Image (cartoon, rainbow, N blue to C red):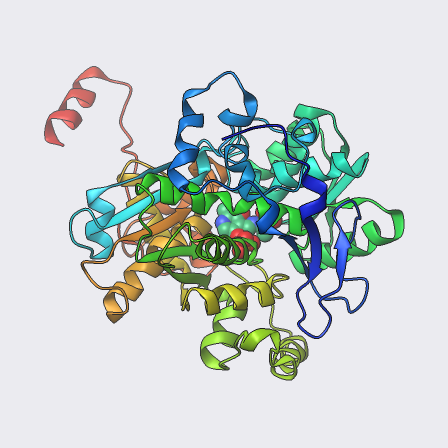
Length: 470
Ligand code: F0G
């Protein structure tokens, strides 16, 4: 493939998601929504002009080149599939060097035949979550438009990711807005350590997002939440790496936790583009898994049958759902704090993905999430609670018979095990019938796979006896 010679600007543009608007804007402009109708934006390309390889396998050779940062990056080595940036503008810290791995024990837990389950370990990113895939793209675009200050609202991982790109590259300073009290300590510690100006708002994630959008609009600050369509361009590469891990043969299912729905949105876009470019001949099915305490997508899609419908979504049903949520004072509540979100901003983009991928949505409760997380840990990976929703969801879909025993299934592990050690220790300190108070107070009454530490005297005989009895 030829490199560094293409004139990117002419074939890339931003386009409004709404079919009745479809306004086009240059990629050099900075908007957090369509200036015409307020809908979300997409980054789009005139693919006929992009030198896309004729086979996905052509991307593989770049792995061998460890000296070029653009080839080391698991995002930018697929640069022809997100061609919005001049290569000299790319901001990378080696993100996306993540792996598709297998674990027989987790596979058994899910109920799949041998060899059927794959775990895409996005916790291996520099800041420990999948967010770096998108943040490298947003940081690149921020540099292209000359931003010196960037901001995001976050349940923790987006803020850690923005903070690492700010401190590691010096392209911009950053502000992170977080809700009070509900951010896992691993993530908060990252934002602080990377030097982000951290604003802890009295309120939840949805409040923080509303405020950051307004602040960015008024102050012309670069917004890095997934309303920013450039971020999703980077997150498409998770799909490319999955396909690469499977020798470019699409799996039957991709299962992903759903929070603000940026990932689900990016996955559908990536797969539709690959299909339209004739680079894959089959689109896998998508399963988006909500935590039961934060199940807006599940409610709207599965209970109220809200569909993409060629972009003509049933907005009245969506509005009345949110209205009732407000009147009944229902707010999201789950131990999987990363996905504790009431009003997912990429809802409509996600509906589009579910349409593209013949998708389903399920909800799993916190006990199911924590048990699945313990299985992932015992299987040799480790992930944070929200990530394990994918494994718990795959298990549920398998039990329902929606996923067949012989299917090939990829679960996305979105964040690293060390993001939320408090929940992990509380889980493993529990016993059947004596669940840790911090979990009981959040509605978890039973746990299945705990691994308690053994208390023992500082005495060699006691120690040896304990070890021999084990
Ligand atoms: N898993 C983890 C570990 C997350 O941090 C998030 C989102 C999700 C899943 C859900 O992904 O929003 O694309 O549906 N975390 C955001 C944050 C909201 O602020 O870090 P999504």
